[in-house]
Each structure stands twice: as structure tokens, then as C-alpha cells.
Length: 274
Image 1: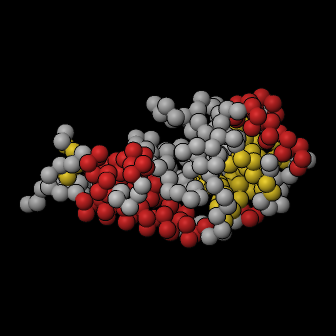
Image 2: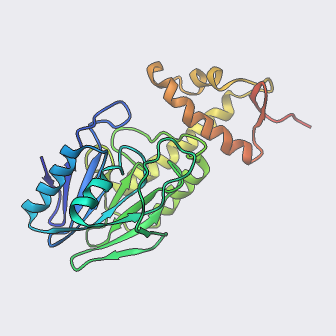
Image 3: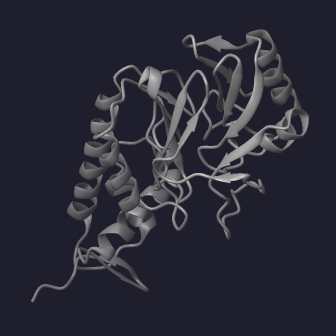
């Protein structure tokens, strides 16, 4: 069922609920006469039908398909939607070697700061690597609304999975958003977030606090990621520890690259003291 979030934005929820997708992937229709569909979602014809029906109800024509990133729960429906509308696909090309990437051909590669200028709206691309290297957020200038994809979601923190995910990039991307004029966040999963900068600041502090906890649990003797996880994530349901290991690995890689921890065949440890 389409939900009108504002005069310019309508949300259509994809029927793909799950452990990693929450209630499902949010697809957004932006505009009324000329419409951009942001994150058309998984390869489900029923969802493409729903997007076309929502556009028809609005009374507009789908001109653009805009991708935050090319993961399988956000991008594959672009192929069928393009066939049925002739819309152009905008975003960044899929990353090679990542099995979670959808095989979507990009018609227009977007870089940081590029603007899709339609008659009714301006949608600015913001390169936000971290969750994955080809991730873009989009700022709807007229409403100060950020479409955050999987950079920020409602109700949980984002999992960072190396090597396509990078914790150092993720924190830098969050810090970049602090400088943007953002009032609300329309996430890839979950409901609209009213206090945009509050969530950005919270997420930065959460990641830095987790990083400090990683350092606090490391010793001179190497520990494996599986041994470290229950120590670093003792405040998280153990059922989620298997997923938490990915973000822990991302934190450790960041700290290793900064020279603050050491990696060996036996695991991860603090550097030897002189």
C-alpha cells in the first residue's frame, strides 16, 4: 500500500521482510509529474506492479530509477521497471567480486555532488561509502530529506561487511553528513526518522564507543574474532553475534590500518610495547 510521506514523496514497501531487511525494503517515488523511483527493490514482479500502480495513482510518469547501491534487496527490480517504463538508471556501477551485488547496468554514473534536476525537485547525490563502496545517499533539497539507503536505517545499526564494507569510510561518511542541511531521513528499511542529525551524531558516537570497547578487550595475546565477539558485544543478544562478527572485523581492520592493533595468523592483539 503506497504511503504519501509528503507532497513530493510516496513510499512503497517491498514484500521482502527478513532478518536483514526488517519490514522490507523501502522504495520511494519522488515527484508527481516526472517521477524518480529510488531503490526499486528486489526482483519481484509484484513489487514492480505496485510501483507502477503508485505512479499511476499519482498521475505521473516514471522517468528515472535512482539507486543508493546495488545490493540484491535494493536494486534488481530496476531491470524490469526499466523495461516497462523506459526510465534511465542512475547510481554507481556494481562492485566486482561482491556476491551480494545485482547485475544492473547503470545508464548514468553519479558522483558526489551531482544533482538530478527535475521540474519539481532537485535530488543531490552524496557519496557515502562504508556499508559498501558504491553507496550513495540522496538529499531532496526542497524538503531537506535524506534518502539514506543502508547508510542509516531505523531501529538498528548498519552491518559493515568487509571487504566491500569499510568502517573507516563509514565513519568519514557519517561525519560528512553532519555538514549537510538535513531535517528528516527516509531510510532503506524502517520508518521515517524525524531527528536526522541526532541519528547521525548518535551513530558516530556508537561506532567510536564500540571501537574503544574493541581496544579495551584486546590484550597482548592474540584473540580470534569469534573469541572477541562475546567480549565486545556482551550488550547484544547472542543470537546476533554471528552478524556482529562482520562489523567487529571491520573495526579491527580500521584499527590495524591505523597501527593501533596487530593481526597475525593467531588472531588480533595490541601492538607489542617498546
